[in-house]
Length: 478
Image (tube, rainbow, N blue to C red; front, side, top):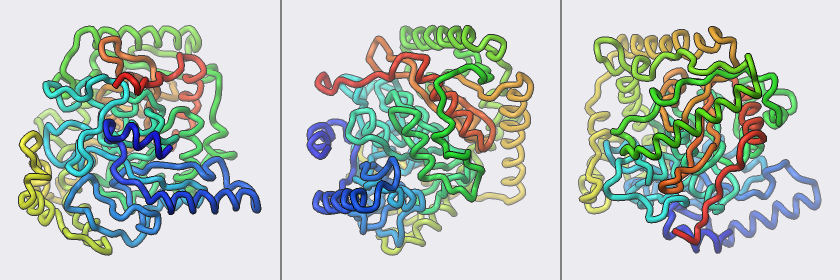
């Protein structure tokens, strides 16, 4: 594994930090001895895992700092690992190191390519020859997607078996589908966000990325706090199924939900292929499920969920209102840190512009706006009530009840992730095919009500048994 990382990471830029080899070998030896003397802790016993570098890992694990991809947080020290990391270690996982990411979860500045951080450089797709094109949009077809880019690319390229990332809105979805992976963002609150460099308390979540639904389920069994939900008897692994029969599924019309040209530079052949392939998949589901499959269901638009008729961006305002106080709280709580506030971070970037604000990525306008943003508690509550009502009662809940369905599916490269983020509901991503014009994978996403992870896992695992296997990248051609 170390050889594979040293061979391919200089190009992929998926791994930002590795624990010392001696520490990793010592940890592996102790776990092997424990397996022999006391038995296995479970399916994660001795499995190396990469953690997105905005999730706290105590220095005892061999990774000195949790940086978020920022030079300003090099040298920072946490007092403890994030609870999700502690749970993985308790399950026997070996924290191999930290994965690269879009800096600060892609909240630094507008237009910065997904997968880029000042500290880690540009993460590259293992599927797209030539890497990110300079003339592409920041989330275009040549881009690996973000912000948990390194977490996804490391799994897709075989640098590690499984990884964890974080998502606020699309940070695991877009890169998960572009890496041909399975992944699941749990209901908000099921996995503790303590120890994670924050964006929004309303929609931040830790989630696993893996090559199979079984690995996703194993990871969920490790990281979900059982006090926050009712875990199925036998764990999430018990919900895996090879049969679509018995599931009730609704599908959105593909084209209206696809991402705008602002995010993805249009390629006509790619758009046509994605629509055609997904519609063919719908046909297969219709044949398998019969009357339990509903195509072109009526679902509230993501735009109307985030923005009302007067043009007020409720979802955006809530995110900016959350960011500064949460970031300040995180920075103030570090055991050691060169910076202690969002204001310090902005000033550090300006003072080290050669590294943090280089000519090709000079933006930190999101940080500046968040620092200046003043939230009115009454307005905050009104905005929260608006997005929750529109995404839940008028959105996902309404469609599930209206059509008597378990899950809603649609293209993963879409605004469906925004709908789930506004609701705080879980969603899953699963692969379908590869773009003929450049080789990058694409897939679908599934949504359901809060605490519906069991339904998503059942659908994902049945999908895996029904449709072609996930694409495997050929690293020799990069």
